[in-house]
Length: 152
Image: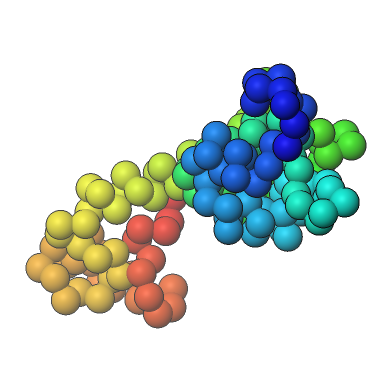
């Protein structure tokens, strides 16, 4: 790339970005195709990423880990002025916007954890406990499939 040490460079190769972020090169290419990150191309058609792309990739990975769909992550990043990398303030706003959805997921997971050993949550009356949790098959009227675990 240049004679400068890596910490003085303004741009990273895809391999350097992969190594620093812990994200596979194929995933970085996917993020680029999806518009989550951008790269410029050198005259030799090699990708070069701004150093602040590391922060953007970190945000993507954190959001993915908690279950935020890539489409929602992309929509949130697209709202940033000029597609810039999120600041601490931006991250606070993004996480606040996702808080209700995450709280709902936490609630469902806790409910699943607490009911998993004794009830599959469908109102089928096939388990002995269902007669207590779902007397008269009340959940059956809501349609097929699990019902108890998705209601709040």
